[in-house]
Image (cartoon, rainbow, N blue to C red; front, top):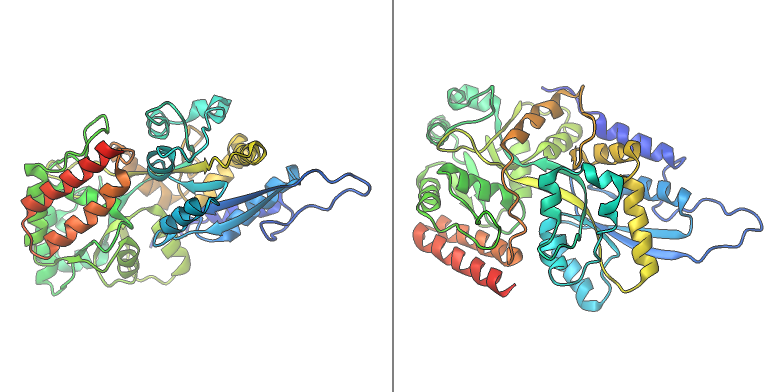
Length: 435
């Protein structure tokens, strides 16, 4: 069992201390006697469950701290889920009432809502001194093709997979793992699946395809097995229909113990893996382990983070980038106040560090090692060397995600892998051309 992870709890304590005490997100400091009340600005902040930001508690502390300096800005907070968050945002857009602030990644803020002309350009925030420290690949992913910035990044992580080390060792499958580098080959992966299946485990690994939730894991699994690609280098079109990727789909289809589940999404297999019901999980990152470690301190097995299997033993992992976007509601005061909130959390290095710690991920810019004495975070940090291309900003991304999981359902039902791959690429590229 790894040491307990304390950094996010410390960050939350610091944030709450900064505002005196925890209260509601809309709690205001007392007004000075006789002072004229400034014109209030009402903002709404919607947040997807990113890392440690899975409840209003952390955000309430940040909002309360912000209001100490900006008492005229009132911010309401709404937590979204990945199951219905997109639908909620689209309904609000249709009704003309989208949130002022939203926290997610470039694939939604830039490639979707930004590309549709719904977001405010945050280019002025990128002129601030702190923005110069943003890592170049992150900055590139946050800059749209038209030169606009529809997202200001806060944190990032490397998505990976995970295995139950105890079960692997008991089943004789640990021999196929490169423990030092947290990697394995495609051949070793297949051998491990067979060993676990022979040991009596029916569901060794689950290719979940009930929706888009956690689809970064299934994409990385398939494309790494034989070094396939998903898009071109310029992120203009999809390149999935290749012999490498077809071969990968056929391998997964043929392996006894690999189950295509048309009812499950990433969150479902995360829960089953953490409960010890399956020995490997294709949807994982450090935030999952932090959450499961804190909420389940008596967990009885050792979670070992892994890169995805690849034919050359070195995979390219999907990265996650998250930050704030501002919907363009036509109100300069509200847009300005939303930018002030972003500056408040990101411009001051100490406050920015506390903000990142509360997400349980890593900074999106160059700051000192904030997890230097944390064994768990150090272990996951090593996986960053395998970070691959951030292609989630390719045009037609929303449609491509739907085409992806429906393609996996066809393969899982016994369909021809080559036909499924061709149909996926055609649908995705049609969306890219239209977008």
